[in-house]
Length: 280
Image (cartoon, rainbow, N blue to C red; front, side):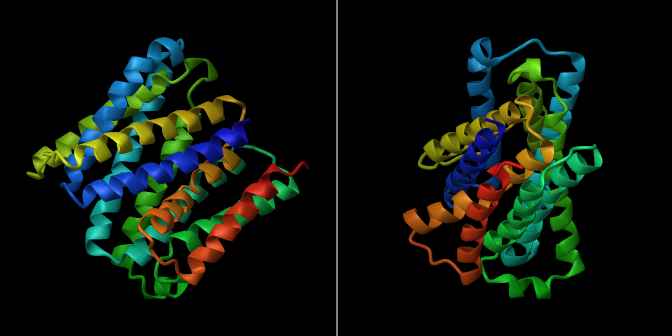
């Protein structure tokens, strides 16, 4: 069940990113991020009577820390995209986000079988390939001024998964409230300090709200995966396959053409999931 929930979270994460990307073409990025996060928070609060659980102070701290890590990664990611090359920033960020929970899980004593190990390795390759819009060769032109912030953004995204995994299994989705409140406060503070516009155009508002609801749903699916005794090394790397659904939606909805590397990445992602789910 943990594997199914983690894969589902990746699908929804990617779809949310796709919708958020469409909204960002019609409204300022900070407005899209802030409004989508508030929309997700309101939906979560409405569902807590049914999906919440007894929460300790430690759960709230871990949740808030996860929210700060995720929003920090988002801000660094957007800033790096504004200065760097998408074909470099995206794959570096994605594979780092996938690698962090794997490393933390293995260093924390998790033991996984040979098939799962192979699946994790293939998944890491898949994340790079799927995110490489201009082909893997573009990574050779990476400069430290672009590479280091991309690594930092990916590490922050990966840390989000790690910190959520620290919450207790009985807490339900309640830790996500702390995560989202901390995230919203950080994004608003940075936006206001930098004089960034927070308005959202009326035409973009439905997309923004849908993106926020999707992002929160994906967070919930991942948290539930960790609460099903899912191993972080596996659930983290599966959730990090989110670029796959983003690319598929771009192909189907926007009729975008995929690079050969991206097509190989889609096949690798399917193979990775198959390997991870094999017994032994």
